[in-house]
Length: 123
Image: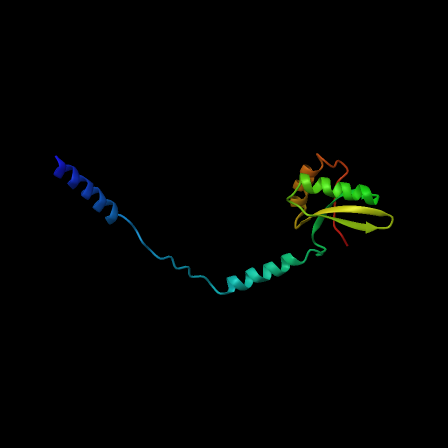
């Protein structure tokens, strides 16, 4: 009985060892892909691109702007909110959207908390 049990255990150990797999993965890709990825990274760094959309969340005095920025950042951590000063108002601008559709989707979420928010293209 002990020999039978021992032989079954040896059989399963041998079986599990024989079905284990090892392998190497080799990725063959064109070198131009790395050049394109680096170019895209450089293009995305340009936050002042006039082809981008932003959402204005607040316009008013300085203390209200800081409060709105803090409230926006706690509610929507996905997008960065910056304070801009255009005489005589402080403004909170959020996001950096490539397409109008992307900005519209974000505006729909933002309007729940900031009903006066709107989309614009900075100059």
